[in-house]
Amino acid sequence: MDDEEIIREIALEILSHLGYEVEVCGDGKSALALYREALNWGKRYDAVIMDLTIQGGMGGKETMKELLSIDPTVKGIVSSGYNNDPILAHFREYGFSGMVSKPYTVRELQETLQKLV
Image (cartoon, rainbow, N blue to C red; front, side, top):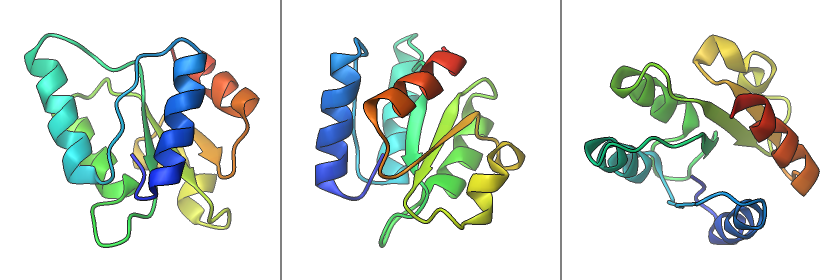
C-alpha cells in the first residue's frame, strides 16, 4: 500500500521477482477491502507492506489498527521515507511485525519478509 504509483510499481516488480503473488493499492481503505476479500475466499496474505503516510487517505498506522481488528495474526510491515518518525523506531508497539525504510533495496525487503513468512 503506497500512495505513489511508482513505488507500487517497483514493489510489485521486486516482490514478483522474489516469487510472491502481489496485490497493490493506494490507500488504507483499499488495503482493508483487499484483505477482507482475501479472507472471504479463505486466503491469507503472507504480509502487508504499508506506507506510513498516505496523502489524503488512511495511512499505515490507522490501517494496521483496523487490520488487527479483522485478523489479529496479520503481519504488517511499515514503510516510510520519514526515517525520524517514532513509529519506525517502535513499530512493534503499533502492531507492525517489521519495518523497511524507503528507499529500500531488494535485499532489505527480502530479508524483512523472510523473517516474517
